[in-house]
Image (cartoon, rainbow over all chains, first blue to last red; front, side):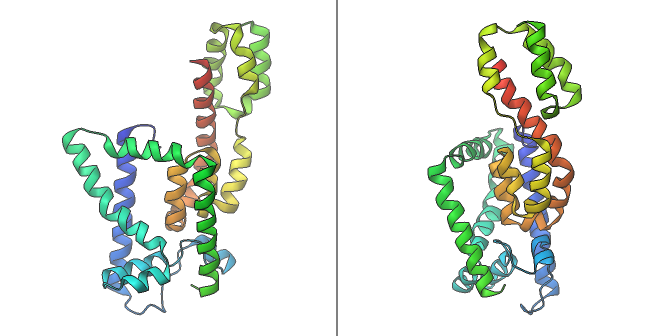
Length: 138
Length: 112
């Protein structure tokens, strides 16, 4: 799927489009945080939140300018927001200037993340966030 | 390499690769030097069936993608609850070919 630069950029742009559409749909149809649509397979099956459940609510808080509340709902929302903002700009820049900076960065990060020194703390962080999500009852 | 050795390799490892790649792999292995045989034997391939089971159970957390070495896509799936659940379902069907593709890449690293 990401064997070459274009495959990666197409995938990233489509993911961002879906992300923005999903966010817009939630923003337009739901103002009340208690009646959120559950789309997460994991939550539907187990009735427990997955590590990234609450990311949409977190992003909505960010859109309303409530940074602290966004972090309290799910800190992963910030990472998603960062990717949603940076990725389309960087991809457009790369495509216009015919560079592949983002693709090379992705490849480098992927190789680095396979090292246990880096992977283990990140996995532990995700697990800690998961436990936090379950205890919050998202 | 001797045809007998190559056929032994193909027979024991055929389930790790796409059927239409096997002939090309066989031809390439016959061409290469005998000294690569020991390296070939130490290669560990990922079982497509295992990745399918992992995908069915932990696909929405991206564990299947982490397993086959697609760390970036794994993070993508993890952060989006399995791509809003859609990507997770697509990957139930995509993960076996993707695993075989990864195995081929691994083999190519040694053979090329």
